[in-house]
Amino acid sequence: MLQPQEIEVLYIIPAIRRELAKALIKFSLSQKAVAQILGITPAAISQYISEKRAKEVKFNEEFQKLIDESAKKIAQNHFLVIQEINELCRDFRKSDLICQVHKQLDTFDNKICDYCKR
Image 1: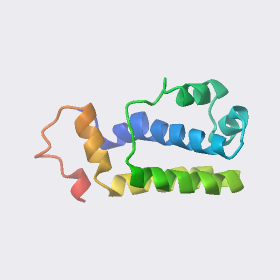
Image 2 (image 1 turned 135 degrees about the vertical axis):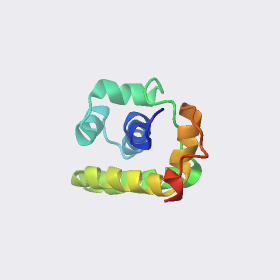
Image 3 (image 1 turned 90 degrees about the vertical axis):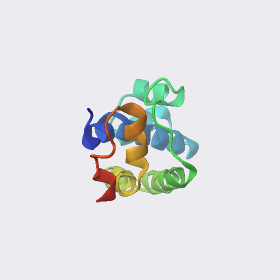
């Protein structure tokens, strides 16, 4: 059984990076620049764009808007990247979205898990 923190590290953070990368490229930043901002390789950016990496999690429209807002802030000030990713993770944890992803990726008795009710 995966812990919610493992879901976040293995699936949510990479998916957030994927969507941030796509959004930052829309601000006319090169793949190389986006990779440098996010602290990952240009190859990872290419794989995010082509949906070859971090493809397991898709975000709903509401959360995607939060990602786009964060991307705008990051495009204006690259030093905000850690803060914005942390805030996105916190928002994701506060919603029931992490439980939805957990149910998709892992088999467990959701009657004994109350993580998302806290």
